[in-house]
Each structure stands twice: as structure tokens, then as C-alpha cells.
Image 1 (cartoon, helix red, strand yellow):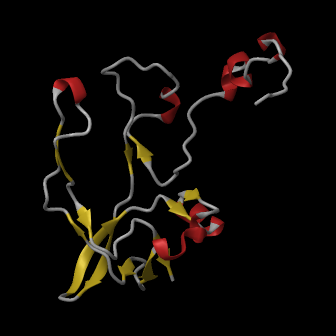
Image 2 (cartoon, rainbow, N blue to C red):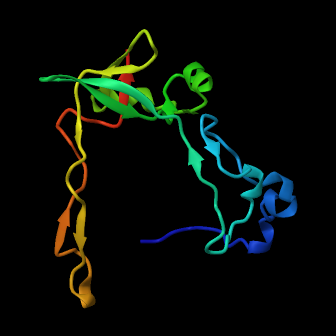
Length: 163
């Protein structure tokens, strides 16, 4: 197999704009619905020392409901992305152009009069405890024991299509 190329010295590539003008780099908060516990402007360091606050974002938590054979059960959710740009801007979340292509991978929900979602199906069992036990010291992976924590049923998906 042969390949053809040109050798270009690294000196021919200029440094990134953010290295020559620090104002061009910095924190950007794309998820406007979230609230940082410290000013985002203070999160400019790349190599933050261990133990230094890095900032925590708090996201709105919504309570909806999911239909089950035994009736409606509470369903808690957060919204991170929307496949409709107008809705994404209204909600202060990321716009995902490809999210509508999820098709059957997204479970259906309807928006109720109060703005919450009613999910047609899909629940998660949060009762199991996650267990991971590494393999022997000389070969830690694969683990000798691995048991998932929360487990979604066959109808659950973290992706939702709101009608």
C-alpha cells in the first residue's frame, strides 16, 4: 500500500486564536436553564488544582407522571435538549438538530395542561444496588462481579418525543 502526501512543517500552522487572544477562550454556558453555584466567569482555568471548587450546575427538576398497569406513578425528569429550535430557546436548553431522528428510540409523552409530561409507558426500578468487583490485581478487567443499579423496563428510554 502506498500513500502520497506533502510534508508540512509545524511552523506553517499558526497557534489557535485563543492562545494569542485569551478573550477568545473561556467558559460558555450553553444550558441557560442551569444555575451555577459560582460565577461561570471564574471557571477559566484548564488545569484546576485538586480540591478547588469547579462549580456545580443545578438544573430544574420536573414532576410528571407515567402510565402503569396499576395507575399513574410520579415521574421525575430534567430537560437538557430539544429538537425544535424555538422550544430549545424558550426552555433555555441545547438545540439538537438530529434529536427528531431518534424515531422509535424515543418514548412518547404528552404535554398536560399544567405543562408537565405524561409518559405513556417506561419506568425505572431504582431499588437494585450497583455492584462492581474488580478482577484479580494482575487483570482487574473484566470485573469478577458486575450488577447494574437502576434498571429501565423494555419501554423506558431517556429520549422523549412530546406530542
